[in-house]
Amino acid sequence: MSIRQKLTYLFTVARIPAILLLTLLCVPMHAQALDAHVLPNGLEVFLVQNSQVPLVTIMITFRAGAIVETEQLNGLCHLYEHMLFKGNERFPNQTEFMAAMKRLGVGNWNGGTSTEYVTYFFTIPAKHLAEGLEFWAAAVQNPLLREDELKLERQVVYNEIAGKQANPEYRLRQAQIHALYPDYWFRRDVGGNLQVIRSATIEQLRFIRQKFYVPNNAALFVAGDINPQETLRLVNTFFGTWKAGYGFPVLEPHKPLTAQKWVVVDNSPTQGQAHVQMIFRGPDTAIDTASTYAADLWTQMINNPQGRFKTALEQAVPELYGGSRHISAGYYTQRNAGSTNFSFTINVPDEEELWNIIIRLRAAVLQEINAMHSAEYFTPAELDSARREIENNEIIARDIPARYIHNLSFWWASTSTDYYTGYVDKIRTTTPQDVCAYVKRYLHDAAFLTSIWLHADDEARQHILPRAAKNPR
Image (cartoon, rainbow, N blue to C red; front, side, top):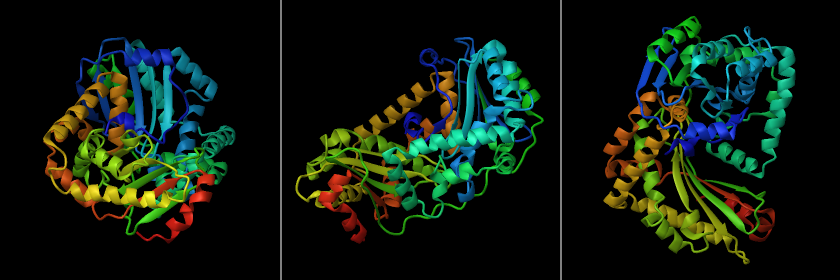
């Protein structure tokens, strides 16, 4: 899937000014060369030269976020992300930190925490490359983590997460991750536990820093108007003495679902429509990288508005809102919690018929999954179109230096850079038989979660909750 579809559940601390963002998105990237290096301390360095405009984007990304947290530390990677902007040995408080960025001519900057990575970046005039690298080296290597700043930032992050929890969809998301990942649900909860955030200590943040904010768990990306050799020399100067640490942990994989599960949440703000999802586990890139290419091809083909899947579902379930236009399915790439999701919206009938419609919908989806055992389910034309669409999306994604390294950093964290740089070639060689193998392994006869989100008044009339609780299938 395109990176634009994959960046979800990301908490950020700043926004990109619209004018500068438009400028960045209008700069074509004609030079696609990627220079990759690894420093002796384990820091991976990726350099992309493009001299169309005198700008440079510097980004540093860590394999961190919810994926490395325990239940007792849930949410602290997000809090640490905020604390990094509060000062370091070179710029000892937030005022000096922000003033330094202003002197560098920073037009856009950001920090974000997601399920499987934490990232920081800014874009500056190319003439300030050395100062920009020195800035981020000081920020990530020597944060002060002061008690007075933590006291303030705990409340800032607490309010941010509390605000997101007030969104009705938050309850749905929490119910889903607890059902899909019962043993390690906290690895999917980016915002974290409010009480953990409220009681966070400097010692806990130092623990996170020593474990995960280390060079052998990080990658530095520099793209724009640079000389790669000179840039690498500067990187060695500012980051070469950074001491390696623990790094990315060995994780116990999430267990596969062993039985059908149901989640019903009745706080949707939309009366008259029920949102139904069927969520299957896998593949995880840490376990089965090969199947992810087939899953991405499958995603493109299954969403063909005139394809067999959408046509069959629209005929089997005429109560679907908007017909095939609101049917979607797709695979979401993750190192530790990949998933395949079918999503539908159903018009809630006046009579107590919604449960029967949901059962009919599930049966229709499973019937099509069974039919996908055949390599002829998708036509050769659909396969060729899907390959072209993926290739075109990747060309567009790599066309602009800043966007290129944003994409690259995601893939570095959730798979590897080799995965990303060889992605299109792998897609070209993925066969219909590979797609069938993905379906057989992860969808056919697999346990899955059925998730239903509806308005409280609709639930009162349709009685979905008690029926789902009694339904073993």
